[in-house]
Length: 320
Image (cartoon, rainbow, N blue to C red; front, side, top):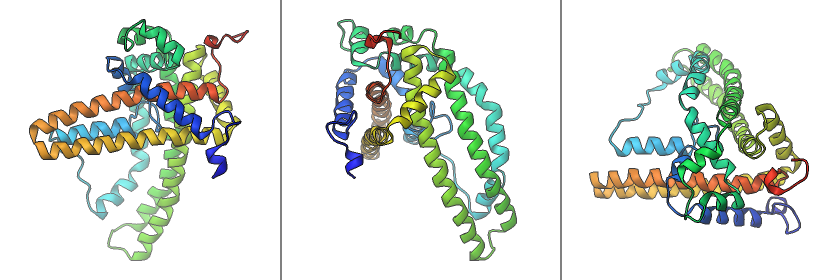
């Protein structure tokens, strides 16, 4: 527990990480169109939450339900087994469409890179230019030349986690085919659960590690305008240099995540009480809350990137 909390002499103690999150929240607290960039900023899942369950995905699903659009209707055991058998095919189809989806969202990658670029306190003040918040076009200009590298970073990490998912889906699909009918004995169901639980835990841990790598590599790319491979390598070196400091950075980001989720739940409750008017207010509040959280996260990881050993030409270090 003491290693997770850290001491004052360490570069990134838990108290300093919380202070950095507070500073980032104050920095992002003034409403503005910059929150649009925050809405698409990656969370601690992967990339732009395309296909992954993160705050943006959760917010979109919640907004859909608020508007009365029905969600997916889970079937019985037979349908679940059928889905498990078809997992490898589903992953392969996702691989085929993933680049097409990413190309359609290229402007969002430029906004993401621009927001990471102005995340540090000094760069944020310069981007504000005596205003309360930076303009969206300022964020767009800050991402100039970084759109394709950011897309390349996203697609590479998405393929990495997709490949891991495919490898894990093969034994699950094979076992589901062996089980056959959902009316099989309890031992088969127990075997299926015993296989699924560790696989899901491994995938969750792997996705979390890649999303942390994504944050550090994104800021390395945005601050130093390096290539995708160089940014990934730099992010990995920062990530493994001090494992406990990286864990503390993740822990504080999860505090932000849980805070936003509680906010979503609160606005969902208002929607249930106020009816259609409440639904509109709930949707608006959730969009704003998600955008605010993205801007906070960009500022927080910009600070964590430097505290964990990352540098930028803005820091005035000779040779950068």
